[in-house]
Length: 274
Image 1 (spheres, one colour):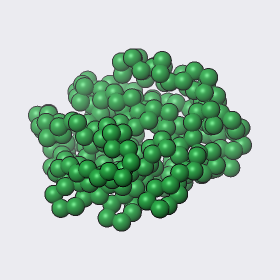
Image 2: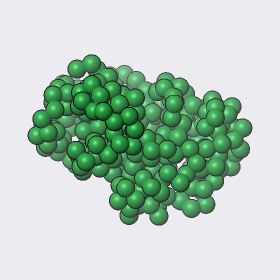
Image 3: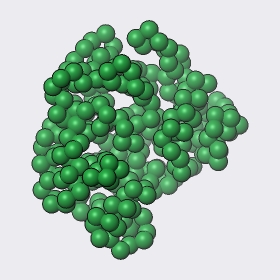
Image 4: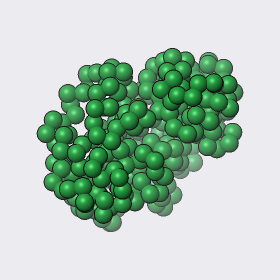
């Protein structure tokens, strides 16, 4: 297993993992075990450095977006001149946008709608346990996130038994479509075109589509709108619109290609009551 380390000022595992962009992680030792597809890593902070231990160093280097200078991202955030955004960037300098697996994000965020993080994690864990390949990391077993073909091999009843509730049919039908078509045909699309295509999948509404665009396809021009973002819009930006679509238009017009970064800092800042 390879061990690599990075500047902890701009890579704080808690900031990265505890902000709603990922569901397959658990506290372990000095930090966290993180799971993506069929791979795992151990990430923790040791003094001024954040350490990643994994058999897949190149994958997790990209996963944690470690080639990007987040000092420059924060300078750009500060240039917008919004107090909540400035406070969040100061408090959560270690936050980074993850580059996650597209299929895993599509199914995970279908599960996430009208749900809370502990329950989302439990449902995903049950699905992985039932359909994912068993693997081992640091002396303990875990299950990979299932491939689309494995997800398509079961009926909606399996997802209902896993706790997915009304999302069971969404998961079953979307799994069949992804197994048949794949998602690579979406790779070359811009953020707006990609969102439009994602909305054609069962169980994908605007917020889920924006999350998949941002966390699965790396479209930083996306700005997911949920109840926290609505609070931010009304309380910190003096917004008047009631439609989430118009709130999304407001923020993407304001932040442009940096929308996704702004969303994550603002989301963190509001939840932390900064």
